[in-house]
Image 1: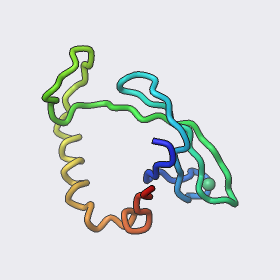
Image 2: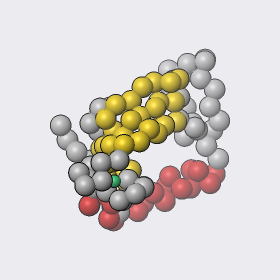
Image 3: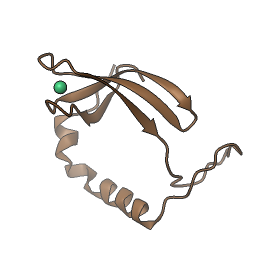
Length: 99
Ligand SMILES: [Zn+2]
């Protein structure tokens, strides 16, 4: 995950944020150390990525993982996001970095 680009914005200067490092806290939770890509800002952060819901079941289920199924509102939001993805200006302005 080091060096990956996400669509996170620096809360101070609104430039992109890069994930510098991340550490697994739990199979559903990962802590990430983030750095603003604006050299004039230089802010760094700690954040978390959490898996919160199951959208579709796994073909290789782990009995130790107990996630709620996404409700209708979450599913609808995912469908709407997919449908608008083609015209998302953020995708155009902030394409994922390839390494
Ligand atoms: Zn910044």
